[in-house]
Structures are given as C-alpha cells and as structure tokens.
Image (cartoon, rainbow, N blue to C red; front, top):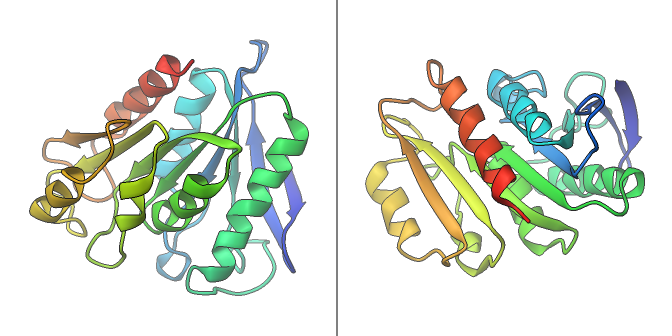
Length: 206
C-alpha cells in the first residue's frame, strides 16, 4: 500500500507491506541509504530487509526521506532525517499501538535510524546493515541496551574491518555482529543471506 505520512514540516512518501493473512506480530520501520547518492526506499537492500520483516510476521514500512521521490522538503545532512524517522515511528505506532516495534537501517539510514531507535522507547530491537564507519560516528551504539543485529560484509569499502571490530569490543551484550564473507557494501550477491539473518533475528524476539 502506497501512502503519504505526515512529518515535521514535510510529508513522506511510504509503502506499507503486511504479512498477508498471518496475524501481525510487530511493526518495522526501514531507513534507506544516502539520498544524495541515489538512496531511496526502493534500494534493493532495504526492499529485501522489508521482506525479511514481513516473513517474520511484521508489518514493514519503507519510506523516502525528505526530498526523495514524492517526499517534500530537501536533504538536511541527517538532522531533519532524524525527524523523518520519528514521523515514521509515530505513524506505525498509531496504526499498531499494541504491537512491538523494530527498526532497520542501511548505510546512511543506519546512522540516522539507529540514533533515533536507540533513544525511542517504542522501538524494542534494531538492525543495522553496512555501517559506514568511514563517514559517520556510531559510538552511540555503545550505550544501547536493546537487542541489536549488525550485518557487515568483509569487503565493505565504507567499513574497515579493524574499525568495526574496535567498535564491537565496546558494544553491550545485547548487540551482535555478523560478518558475511566476501560481501561488499551493497551485498550484491548476498541479499538472500541478509534476508535470512534478519528474519531469524526477529523470530528470536519475544
């Protein structure tokens, strides 16, 4: 289902996908990669991540950040985009008020989305894909107590393995890091693996 959701000073283009006839067990918000570099809610990684959430019984909301597609406004270097994430959480929270919520972010969407998800009490679990540690600081994850799955490729050009491993050593026990051998930033040949890992993680949530 395509829709427009109200944001803070903007309106956001979005797509909601549910698990068909199965009972919905949760709500998922998905955040796409960098708008300036062609990132949209149709990104293949985000699309497959939404399928993973749906397979686990979650309703999945993909949305375009401000200035992308039919979303109004313009790129705001991550600040306004945090408001966009909150708006998406607000919308899903009003539609599924009794259900647990999770958040998935890829690349720039992981940097923006996980910051919001860490502090928003409505979000119970997080998934970060392809953290671009060469561009952004993810130290906020060190104080994050929520169940969190981080999926990285060993050949990710935006995340040196040594840097990710240094961050991993500082993460709390509820966070786990999974390396996909040979995968680059966009998981071109490993999207089935990414999808399976996310579905499995959500199936483990109580």
